[in-house]
Length: 394
Image 1: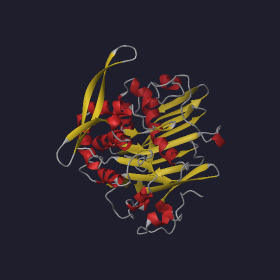
Image 2: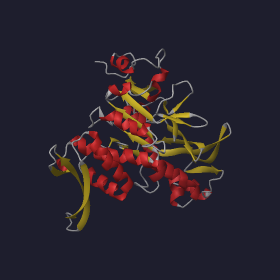
Image 3: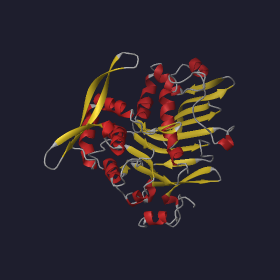
Image 4: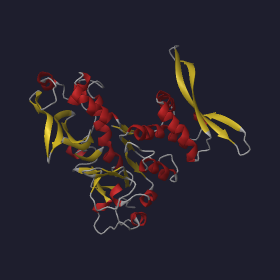
């Protein structure tokens, strides 16, 4: 589980920003709490703000770290820079990211510093009593790196010569260092529709890949088939069938096509391919694959513009999936951006972040940081009146 994220000089955020899933004992317990012996954590965080305020950039570090930690060693051009952008007014300064997370009952901290598309330092720590101790420290020195480790047996010579656009964790996993496996498996459970360039905008071609993912995971497919008819999309069921096609190169291939089943009030039925369904139905089909994967296996769903093609009335249903133990047995977490302020009526102030851009720099704050805001205040009314910030200045 994620406890907190801190970062600076990353896209539109110049100064340090924080996304904190932890909360003290003061907030009234809700169904969105994860109760642990040492702390309480939020299951759900919503990010609200004006267009261009930095909502996507606030959640993007989590998706970026998933890619960097898991895949940077084997993906991309070995000579290219790391794909990210510092704030354009601070292009020559370091970018820093730090995430605290719980793995196998132990709190860990991963720190990454970059500059010019290259790693400056990469540090992994584990909490021992009240302090953190490093598992490894990799820090740039001249054309290579210095490397120290305690219980993370990556060969020192390889660590010192590892290229500066790749994670040592990703490299260690590729070299079958068993100590790296739990961290890779942990961050692979981050599912997202966010990439370095922003949100993966829905394209109809995603229906094929999503349908194939459902076919590969019968458990997730069963949850989707059960969930979709309950979203008032006019569906009575969904069928996914393999189709044989011929590629542009003249080769035979197989794809998976979803079909929507429809039933009238008098019992008559018909079906449509998903290419004939509404954009909202198509989008829900793709979105649910990410959400249900997190719910089934645990982890973190990082979703940008979750309400882009969904009716606002559907959002409380999705939030309830994360709220209740029977649908979220592994205490998966969800962080999302949206343009639906009505959601402020369904969450508490410690589960809501607002974003605003001032003088070309994004800022973010959690609503329980707002002085004088009470737990029983009408958050929606105050937000719409502009009392909380995070609204367009027109």
